[in-house]
Length: 102
Image (cartoon, rainbow, N blue to C red; front, top):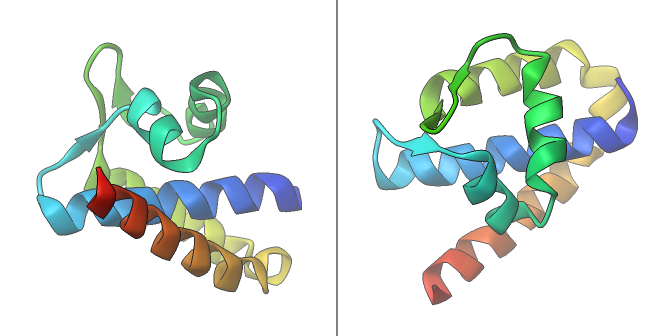
């Protein structure tokens, strides 16, 4: 996995964890993830398509299964993403701050 993709996946994971913290049965959309991460929604859909049929057109992705899949992918690529996790945690903190403002 490329470093840039691993970084994006870590951001998606942080956004999913934020949604789950607010509502355990939350769903997220590529547009919602885009708003939180600043990553284009089309790129998000491309990245998440590698995980199979987790999302439903017009509805989005259930946050908890998506978070589990993202965490597994990141864990499987741990050697590559070593060091990215810290930056993702910083980014998640920024996401939480931004969400609190909204």
